[in-house]
Length: 182
Image 1 (spheres, one colour):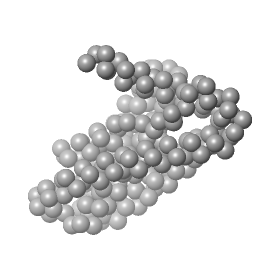
Image 2 (cartoon, rainbow, N blue to C red):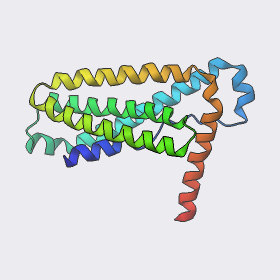
Image 3 (spheres, one colour):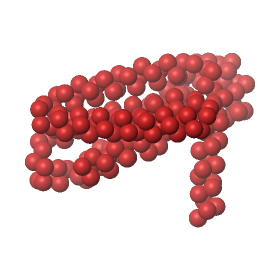
Image 4 (cartoon, rainbow, N blue to C red):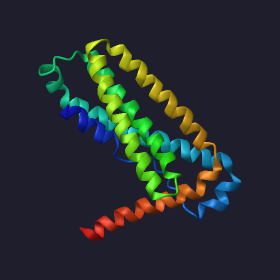
């Protein structure tokens, strides 16, 4: 349970950044292909980076998972793939949550998704480890497919440009505020 909670909390950390600035709007809105390529590359970069983070966590926990829980290599690999796909799904959902204007609605939906994904994933992982690890693999493929489908739809829309710029500014200010606070 503790390992699951730590991995699940790690899945909720971070977001996909686009690095778009207001000054880019004039050039990039005329060159739609450049905006789409930029968004695809940042999406792929962040998903790859977070996937590597999860893999590193699993490599560090592997001796414990093998010796204490007596999991096989295939079970550990499928669990790692499941949490990578869950991380991607959560990153995609966070992009849609960022489009919500009301802070109350956004907080409510975030909490609802956090609780729902957490409960469902916990039950699914425990059940799949007892029944068949292939079930977890199938859900992982579903997560990946759903993420790529929704993410591709969002990438191809240029109407999210101004929202992406605002989110990027907020993330920059978050880091500046934490530096000043330190």
